[in-house]
Image 1 (cartoon, helix red, strand yellow):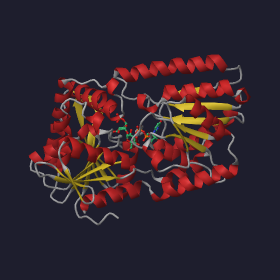
Image 2 (tube, rainbow, N blue to C red):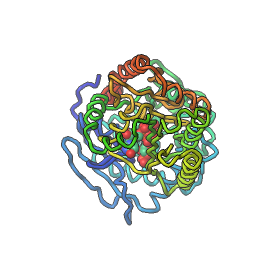
Image 3 (cartoon, rainbow, N blue to C red):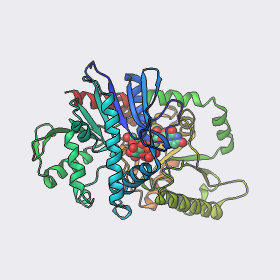
Image 4 (tube, rainbow, N blue to C red):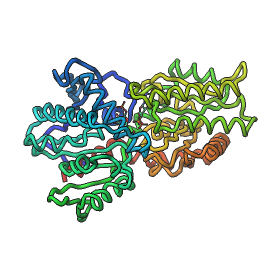
Length: 459
Ligand SMILES: O=P(O)(O)OC[C@H]1O[C@H](O[C@H]2O[C@H](CO)[C@@H](O)[C@H](O)[C@H]2O)[C@H](O)[C@@H](O)[C@@H]1O
Ligand SMILES: O=c1ccn([C@@H]2O[C@H](COP(=O)(O)OP(=O)(O)O)[C@@H](O)[C@H]2O)c(=O)[nH]1
């Protein structure tokens, strides 16, 4: 339980979901829900490029949430966000050392932007405030705030997976970066596996000692606590919005366009970690193996572009266009398109209705910190006629949802078989699996996540 606290909650993250903005990213979606209920200040990047980084702090209030955002200069955006955060840390954290692009200029930019964040955040902090820093963009922030005299409690939450120590040590100068985590009072990750990786790295590579209750003490005497806190969704709201969405014109029109076919849905940022080429291959294999499904099934893949100035992201986009075109070329008929591949983003109010219309939710990342789409799909279902979730074992969500059809996303045959099983699953089994998953999602929702993280931070 989250104890009462007299100071404000200050959330810091690179990505901020400003009011009225579609948040195509789990951090922004979840933080918006977590903050709206409790209130607080959210500090981060405005999403805009300007002549100078942090030239001005833009402020805005919406209900009990205050927003303070800064712009980034082109150079800082390229070195910090595109460069070190998304071309060095992101592939490393998602087990893709082959894609890691390390260079000193990007690291310098990363440290420079963290230092500017620290300057601005330090000005905002009052003595009783609780500070909650989020994600790999801002690992050294607490160390920099401490240098500026901040003594408040500071927590850090990593939204991505944390790979095994054997991989972490391949990052040049990993020690200088990762030991700064010890300046936080609490470091949170999604799963028990991520937590073991963190502890193993600190103990075996940095010489820290483990004490009771996941407390770590570094060789220079700093102490911090680590913990696993699986992020959740606003389960009740999603369930309610999904039912309401069935009255929307857009959902009605989708429903009509299906002409009675079963729909499989995928919703992902266009990111190589999401396993989209492998997913398309698995769907093609299903069509090849089960001709009876031709014309009876449609796969809707929603994939809004993400980080599109990073070359690997441009490449995955081209690759998917090619594969979608190929599959439609092979199997389409004048009155049937096997894949509907859509590069737009949609607000939650509509997505929840799309999920509810789909017989199968197909969520097959190669690695994912959590994956909120998997949870949203389940929460959106009609309790009387729920769909089936096919879920990668390598998404954090698989730890909480063992009643999904769990698959290895790199094995197209296994995914194709799971799709076939999902499409023919009897109602009674669908209901049993859905109920068990929904019970978990109702208990472990976004409020429980916030309360358990902040409760541990205040302990
Ligand atoms: O901010 P972007 O560069 O546009 O990227 C969007 C977010 O992607 C990542 O989200 C992660 O957080 C989710 C919530 O905990 C989790 O479910 C998912 O598995 C993660 O991939 C990234 O970690 C965020 O920082 C980005 O904002
Ligand atoms: O068109 C879209 C596509 C995605 N999302 C949201 O973006 C989040 C994606 O979070 P997830 O944890 O699945 O993955 P991430 O993108 O953070 O890696 C989910 O809340 C989706 O509902 C959205 O609002 N509109």
